[in-house]
Length: 456
Image 1 (cartoon, rainbow, N blue to C red):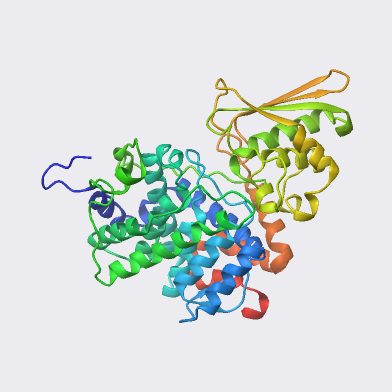
Image 2: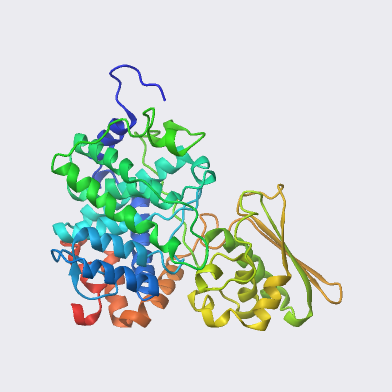
């Protein structure tokens, strides 16, 4: 992008915008959105902290040592804020139930919320300061995604960490009350840390790892900029800047559009414990199951038509681990048909060899249909042995803006994730504090509730 001599760069315009960002500027809609996501984030992170990847991340944060500044969600003890941000981001991405955006299907909360909460606890920030930081960080992340996608994703970069580090940086900068020039430097330094590849599917924990460095590096970029370390003001629009390096096509104006208007955060939520583009297929399966109760032994064939945007993804019919199962459309559809749900309990290594799940998974034929309305749209056609055909079409999955989860459904999801780890009483305490977080004088009160009882 060519710059007019002496005109402010994109980072400088963003720095000016976010330096003026305060509680009074938050719309009622933004406050509600970030609070709903705060409850969801904590629930998902608490559950994810007990997975193998969450446990390893917490152990790593603990063994590296340092000042006791911030809480490890679902664990015990306190660690440096950077390490808490790192581990909590991994935990919150470890059960595939974290939030989602509309365009790129990235996740706001693992990088942004993990960084903001760790620094807020370290700094003794108030609930109002936290809400401002969360809203600002999410806005930054979404603005950059809109400027860079779909080219960013199509080139093999994972949007959650590549754009998330900038969101985590802005959220951290707001907690630390950085002025405009230091926010500009922090954004430049975040660009030096931006990374994350879509080569993450398979039996390993690779996908869980990606938001960890993004959250930690956001804390690092803001903190060192606050100490006086300067970064490139041309990080977005420079000849070798983010957009030039990460994309073939981009829209830089998306970074700065509508600064004079309240920003609308489009945050969607996951009811199923797997990759978001699979949710439409699950909803198709659940609709047919609910309406027709098909005899699973009498199914002759299943065709799943997908839009070309996602048709080549998630095709693994024989996942070897639950990590693979969570990005397998055939397995997810099979378990939805058998169990009537697709929660974390369904994505379990012990379930993978079940004959019915294998039979149904291998039966599913994924086809491509460019006429489908959306990139994630799915149309499922089930043919029975007697020739009966059942069809379901889903454009907007449960949890989407057009088909939202209610406050009651989000609370039920939260309870299902937190009760087994921290108990019903603690879940009630956390939910009540989140509901009135703007009145909380110190975010540390909330974070201490997310630790194991013996750590309080």
